[in-house]
Image (spheres, helix red, strand yellow):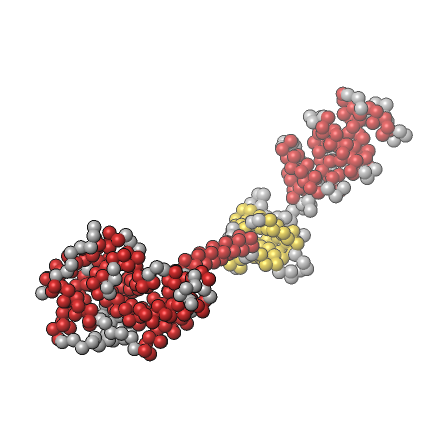
Length: 289
Length: 178
């Protein structure tokens, strides 16, 4: 399309009047002022940059806040009123072994003491752990607790005490059976037992168990634990299998290998659930350091 | 000397002087087009300043342009368009912008011409922005079709098409407004 037909004369005249009414040139002062102000106008940040900066800042702040809150986990304040408290936090689990620990978590948190396990959420509680037991004092909200046999809740302003159970004592009840040819107290008995243990059958089983018992009698708990393990490997359904397991866990604990002892105690519950000492083993395990 | 120098080689001060020269040449025309593309009482001095804020920050394209006049008109049209948009938003929220400066008394016009001018202003306000811009630039500012195409960033044929419809609408509305 080329240039269209012109306006009518009347329309042109009207536009001309409008043009004349809007044709007011700038004065010299106005002219100078407008350009001067334009030249001095601060450079406004472009809206894209402002938007990008805002979005970036929001993202950074949100991420930092999320990480900060997430990384801090439960807020645990330690009140060392009776010497330094012994406690540790792993995720949402706070384990208190001794001392006073005040827990005011922002998220659901489990607090475990030797006597109980409590769930603290939106509440504030003081756990006072002594050898005599655990005293739970709730300052705010409500705390649910449970032991192996009981459970309940403690409301704000109330206190509850769970006394420590008598310390579990584990002992290997079965003494070493007699092994033919290796009399008790005879010189060279352990060498004799070693020779018999290398064989097969009931004699080898008894000899191996006797070797382990002899080692623990000597105070060689590392060696006795290893021999009990050897017994368990060779005779998993042997006559002395529960005794060997208990002997191994006790001797490992004595040798300072608490983690291995705990693992052995856990395995005992699975391997010998009908054993009358299973509950004692479980309690003993709880009391391991 | 600045006029002969490539824009890319100019220093900031040389660019500023080149823009100032364009300002001196076209300030009156630009303030007139701003007045014709906005509403009575609009602070056109402020808009003219806004035009040159934009120009000073993008001076090289202006200096390098084949038609600096068309380039300046293009900026002025966009600034006026943005001002009208802001005005509409303010009106939408019932916050009519108070006139920062009173409408400048126009040049001496007889009452009949003044009344005609007011009718034309109303009619132009009723036209679509695209038609109004083309009509004002062509009929009142005296820009050629190619210059308008540069200013508006559209093909020449589009300019003629818009001008055709703008003239048609303008005439019809003028008849309606008596």
